[in-house]
Length: 225
Image (cartoon, rainbow, N blue to C red; front, side, top):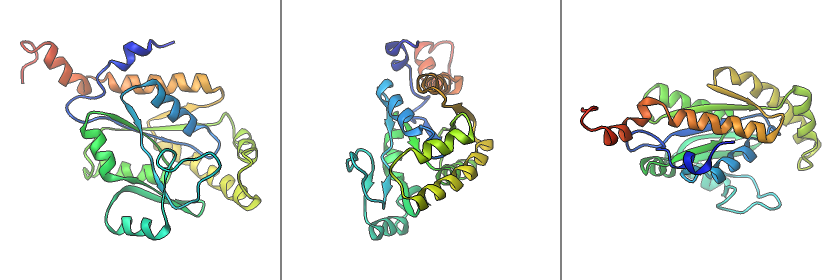
């Protein structure tokens, strides 16, 4: 097991900017649970709260699980260029606030995004084209098999028959997208999968280029500009 106090005290990134961790998965793979566990574990990691046009499910709270807004408000935010990314998934729209993301990263905090593959691809293209100059890490979570994925979707108990069929088809297409992600975590056992997610976060935070700001402070005479 990792030592929580030792891990939490590591510098999140070199310079003034935090790291943006993007976690995608087909429905039922457990990415939301893993993201929440990571935020509970790392004191300087924030879970970005997305905006959505869908209605809250039982137990969900506005501003904590999602920012629940109307379709008209969402459209106005698109037109105003307020989203870092947005996508339509299962008939509802989801988006990540550009300003909220930029502020957290500028404060030196790392962000973990529970994000659809469409949104992740949008951010990837912005990073590649230098339109969004931040460190980005792309992580894909998988169930242990396609059969297990289908079983989890059917057992959710939250969707209509038509919605289940739609999620199954989307899941098959989303799994094909994992080929351009940097890390893949198979969630057969939640605790094992979480250990792997922690390992990714720690490894990315420990990269030399992201540690240079702290290292120059520790060894100013040796590591001059």
